[in-house]
Image (cartoon, rainbow, N blue to C red; front, top):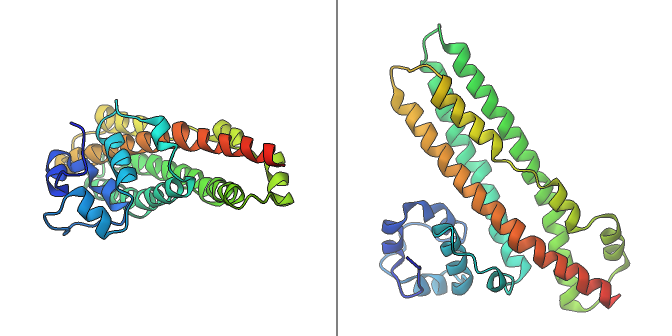
Length: 243
């Protein structure tokens, strides 16, 4: 189903509950009433077309209007991706860690070391994801915003040219490691090797959260790799021509 601007946002959430975190990244919180997507976006000062493109991209894996997404300002993409990072680090990761800790605490002494292994494994993943996000937030995203300002103003400061000499988005492509592999390994560890506990419901909930995080990160990376990177490459090319 293609999500359209005249649909009620509440109906969209009923259809695909997984879209709630994505909607929140636009500053739209629950309690928005019976309005349509277009009405709510106008109220929240959100670009309706950009909202629909992102929502449909997450809702339907086959939907990816690459050229249309590239027509939006890089700053809009960066702001959205930044909000996604906050969601991962401030909500999703702590929630999963709390569940794994609870599972470890409730396991019997005979199997406690196995569950501690799962917790240690997740904490290692947390460190790697945090480092990955930190590199994007401190190096990549500011670089993107700076390039867009140069194109908007028509001025090309020497420091920007120097930075392009020392770092380009091609370097980001090389270092943009796949952060999904460890999630897959952790799911396998829980499914195949962790013994049953008295409250298996916690294990099931952890798996649901891990699958959800994995899907979200996959779509997040798809937007970065297929939209942000080509757009920045085009901006770099334009600035080189300007200079």
